[in-house]
Length: 428
Image 1 (cartoon, rainbow, N blue to C red):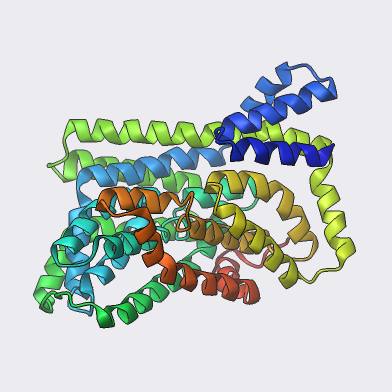
Image 2 (image 1 turned 90 degrees about the vertical axis):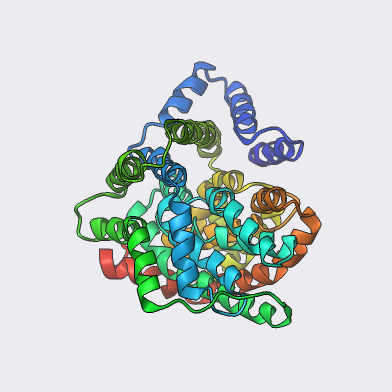
């Protein structure tokens, strides 16, 4: 019977029924079969949102949307051009640096792809880059956002897996920077055969001026990490301070922000938050079925009986995640896999924070692989490029991310060194 719930859920998802609706349908069926009053559905929906940690999600989303509305993307772009625009395929390198900076505010791949991506793709096409090349590097660089702090995906994983949000944020710093380095190397390698212009090298004074104009934005990631490191703020409080800071920048510091733009930022935040939290609430109904059927415990026992090594288990799980990433979106994968897989990986001595970063990078690879790759759909529409051409151009970046994934599996300290340094060794 327990396997039927999972099969039924996957069947509903594959038929195109929304994630939240699929979770509630399966949960409702389980409640009816168990003979429990249907009012349990409402109780579990409410209980699923009763968490202080979840407050960080709408606040981080608001911060990113408000930064977008304030026009800081232009200042970030100008600063990146002065720093790396003179390199080979300079605008592609600028694209990556933009995502590195913007990820410190949005924490969302789609916000980066839609916000910075529009300006980046337009600039690259005007300089002779093909639409598919511009779109593919924009999609790939946007996936850095959910790995580096702040990350709404990391907050969601921390909530579902019951781990520290702060540790998850810190665990993403080094892997995220490695992703940046790998993208820059791949772009430089691909640039050997591209005949595109580069910007003249900027003078020191020009760089300082661009840095000064972008300074209110550049200090955000360091202030957030510093606040958590010193214990001044919790991760949720950092989100609140960041959202307030973004509102001050948009409403008072950058006078060019319109009231309509600010209103649109709040509207977009409300829509995105509603979509995410509806899935979270619905997942709690499904989680009740999992707990009642003891599915996580059964899987843990089965894994221990197979006597797999930690690396072998991670390799198997990642293969499953990669396949799922081709047909399901990131939220569905996280909700489905985390409560089932975490008890098994912990039983083999794998740190759940380490596993969380592996899952997030795996899901970002899924955003670059059709037929569901959301990042590809967003940038292909912006660039007016065929989805197939964009997906082909993204293959080298997918290959680079797969190598990073393997490196993380075999060298856990890449993810765990920084959180262990700041918060002390994990007790799990």
